[in-house]
Image 1 (cartoon, rainbow, N blue to C red):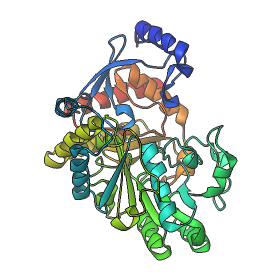
Image 2: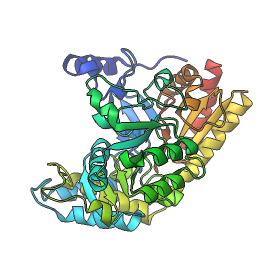
Image 3: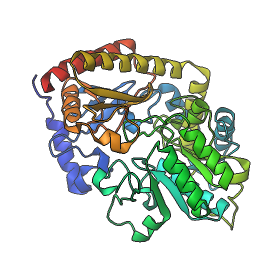
Length: 438
């Protein structure tokens, strides 16, 4: 197999390095001195690099592209909106329409405020929860990723398992320099899907706990699903002790169901955060929740705002995206393609005699190779696997024109532009690539 021609890509990357740290705008985009891609175009389920190499895209900008790249319906909605300008120092009608749509689609959402990214949405949700509960600490789960703000960059999937302490008594492991040490004192880190540990901790420390922040599907640790009763227990404990349940739906919102995880699992948070699939790649995020908890937002009492919150570009894109998801079978198509892909991958790995586990939902799922613990229930379990083998497999797939995240912790995302032929091509590529690495 000959290597891809990447002369123009490398030339652009060198230019980027001259003016941007490591040549990227997000650390997650850096793959190495010779491997970091520069992408110039996307259409449907495909992207093209600066040398014209085409890739079937299962990264989808880390998940936002739910319909497909450059969807003409979404783009036209944006074009129509920006003809009337992009931003005002006032509310504009599209904000209202999107909020109305969210309250209809998403169980538990009665009021909405906007942000511009998932990071902003979880940051504001924590502030709302603290104001409502008059408490400061919050529970997060190991391996859970909730954005780049200081409060949540502890014990994520970037943390070495050895830094997390014992399963019985987890430690909050800081993931970055530059975070004040005092932030650690506000976090209670627990093991995902450990119901006994969760209940024991809450009953002992409820008077300190403002919120329980949870990804209903643990997106950055191979899309691990919640154990039976896990989300229900969080809901029960929050109701019992006046704690705010924050469902981080940045990845699951509008992807695993039209109403997100709250619809899919039948468990509503007091607050839900949305971003990625909300606007098919345009910048918009939202915090939605109950009237009671959202009433904590009050001018002069609880600060929430942002110059670009509810901008016309994002709102127009969201309106078109949500309309398509609500009124067509786009999600059913995604789920059908994902089901076929998951089944096909399982058959390939099984035939090759390769131990594996495929976790998650057909719209977003992870692959763990040679796991030492099965079933995988948490980040500690998933980490006991062979990430180097997965990275080699991903590299071989990319050389053959199928792009997945080379890091096993990030799931494959599917979009509505995928065809049955794309899925079969992917399975053939996996089969061929697997022969190279095993």
